[in-house]
Length: 429
Ligand code: KMH
Ligand code: ZN
View (cartoon, rainbow, N blue to C red):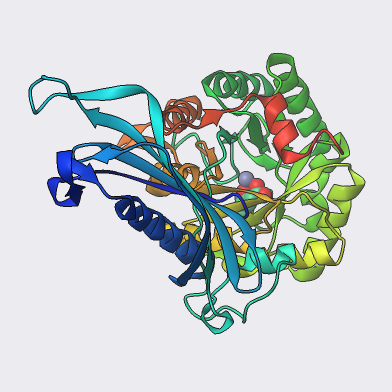
């Protein structure tokens, strides 16, 4: 939370000019700082708060009507009710002077700092509506949040993004898509294509050659060896398996001592089936994952599943850093909606990572949303077999490539497996 930045950019108009020569008064810049402070406080506290005082204000350069000014604010300190903020305003485009046409303007090669300030705002305790992560950080607590209890703090999105490819699944059949890989060779080739397209993690189910589901450790070992011979992705076998499998069967791939493994954090209706993950079973599976030296990916299909994962952490059944996967849009569970992601992300601890995996036609829009909000994402034919309406994706790689392209378009960078290992904390295990 400390270090959160907000910014705005606007053009000074003729109305803003106060002095001779179209000069804009310094108070106009302070009004921008006031707006920035307001936005920061709303993001932090869900309340506009009040400006109490400036500690310092310095003006460095004149601002004229027609100039484009970019102003930023950064949260420096958080007290019980006080929030200390640093401001800066910079001119990025200026009207051209000196005999040129009145409409001439120049983009400045180097922005010119026009003002800097440090100020303090207050938000009375009774008005604070703090996001949960602040409580978890042990910062001074405001009252328990009231509805709507969440604030969506778009802290500058982390640049790196981990793309996970779910390339097989347990529900899919060749009748639905001919691009479903089944044999170790096919799965390894598909994993390598996904790696090429930008995936760092492979979420893995395996099949017998006839397409039937199996959690056999031998088959997983065969497939994982084949994948490792073709690419260096983090392998994340499923311990969810297929609906109806026993806990012991589901735990099969842990014998291969994978780097990661899924841990499903609650029971849900799964289409017309019920995917059972009782609380004792979750704990037993978590213990097995830990004993195998793997990091659990905490699959949450409902809000309550996040709470369950946090309970596992406080019971020390699992340990930080935590990695959450919000699985959205399963029929019978939480829907794939923007407000759902905005809320669920506020529930995870600040040092945790989170990703979104949405099914069917929601896959790409929710992937894009997650990336805009600073999260990671999972795509692949396990969750969605189409590239567009009626157009089958030729395996998972095109879906990964599309997600990677979107990531780059918003300034995020799909990471290599080694970087993913560092972000997830896998190397320290
Ligand atoms: N096949 C689903 C019932 C996981 O991989 O851990 C469970 C699943 C989740 O796919
Ligand atoms: Zn799965």
